[in-house]
Every structure is written in C-alpha cells, then in structure tokens.
Image 1: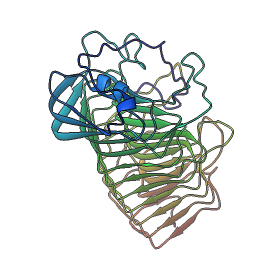
Image 2: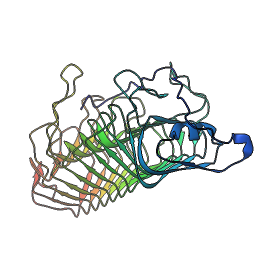
Image 3: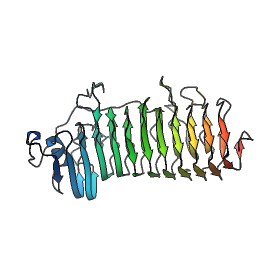
Image 4: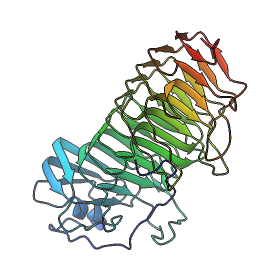
Length: 356
C-alpha cells in the first residue's frame, strides 16, 4: 500500500478527449446511447443528457471515462473491459496515475477540489476496469452513486473508491490486485453508504472505511488481503463511527504490506475485522477465520487505538460472531479501547482473556 491516511486528491487540469463518433445532441432528447467496439465511451457521455443511459456492447475499450452529469447510467452489455488509453487522456488523469472511470461534480475546481453542487444518481454497472495505475473507479462529491456488478482487477490505487460521498452503494462487485483497497468509502462523515455482496481478494485492504459514519458493510467475502475489513479514524475532526459490519466472511487475510516508515504507516498483515479508533459501531454475525500475524492490526476482530488520532475503539458492540484460528487471538482489545460489549461470540482465544 502507498499509505493508510491518503488525504491528497490530486487531479490535473482537464484534458480534452477526442470524440471518434458523432452522437445526437442533448437537445434531441435521446435517452439511450449505444457504444460499440471501436467507438468512444467518453463521446457518448459527452453527448448524453442528464438521466440518459449509455449501453456499452461487449469488447475492450482503451480509455479513461469522466462522468459529471446527474442521473447518468453507464452499463455493459456482454463482457465489457475498460483498460488504460495509450495517450493518457482523461479528466482526472495526471502523469503516472490514470483512472478508469471518474465521477465528479460538474462545477468542481480541479486545482482546489472544491464544488458547490454534488453529482447525483450516477449508476455504473456490469463493467470490468483493468490495469489502471490509479484507481479503477474514483468518485468525489457524489450523492446516491450506485456501483453494481463491476469487476476491478490489478489497479494501482483503489479498485472502487468514493470520497466525500452521501448515500448510494457498491454491490455485487469484485476487486483484486488493488495496492490500496478493493473497495473504499472515505472522507464521508455522513456517508449513509452500503457495501454489500462484494468479493475482495489479494488487495492491500479488502474493504476500507476511513473517516466515515453511517456505513453498512454487509454480506461480503473478504479473503487474502493484508487487512480484511478496516474502519479507521485517521485524525480528521469528525472521527470514525456509527457503522455496521454484519454477515461478512473474513478469512486468511495474511498478505504482507510493508507500510511506509516516512509517513508513519506501520506494516500490516493478519487483520480480520480491524477497528482503529472507531467508535459506536456494530460488528455482528461475521465469520472471521485464519487471520494471523504479528503486526499492530493482527487478529480476528481487533479493537485498537488509532496511532493517527490517539483515539481508542470504544463503545462498540461485538456480538454473535464466529471467530476461530486467528492470531494473536480471535478477539483483541488494547488498553486504550474501552466500554466495548462482547456478547455471544463463538471464539477460542482473546487478548485480554475473558472476551470470548
């Protein structure tokens, strides 16, 4: 991983994307656009009116796509793979960091990353986003963004990431090979976001919820990452808490992530469900097995103090989980994390003892 507390949201000035086709204008009130192999997805997006649907026929498309219109639906029909363009063009791209699909407010200032009006009700579905050295899907300043049945493979940053968002969901998707996290919800003190029925494997973190309140992480399969599910208070004023982590399968998250000594990021490995300075959460009905390591975050379900904020993981409810064969223990709570309730968990070991 590059780092855990990734605040910088760097974007370049807009780069014009050349349209290879002529589409009807928004004034024609057309509500459906079809893109075929050899044609431009971005050209269809540019020609669409808010609320339109863009259907992409099966094939491989080498481009970065930027969406800044409300209610736009981008969906694949068949196996649709989006891969990096040879020329690096794209609204959110900068040298050395290309993004597959970028969702931004129409009035965003790309120098300061400020805006007045969120981009609303965008839907992205049935696509593969592969091999970008930045994020597969990146959203900033969204409301009710829904990502459904997307596969993000071998992207250098996040697989699917939404910063500063309200509402919406990531559902039925798959992410692997992301250096940061497969699925990410961050910088959203009132997120009200759902991450459900996804599979994340072989990433730095499977599901990463950072500086967020009111997220639901349900029914996911998270395996073979450095950390499975991670709730983090990174030191920003609003903190982290009021989230629900339920009915997930979290197993064998034993990859080794080296961390970054210059940025104060410790090595990570062997973390199942990890709360670092996160409060008032519910961790319930999860199956957490085979997560084993000797790093700060290691253990099955670990409630720990954040080194970034100095805040303990307190006032959490850890209930009805099945935790086995985790090390250093199935349940872990450090001295700075207090007033947590552990109840009816099926587990064999805890640190300190007596939590099972």
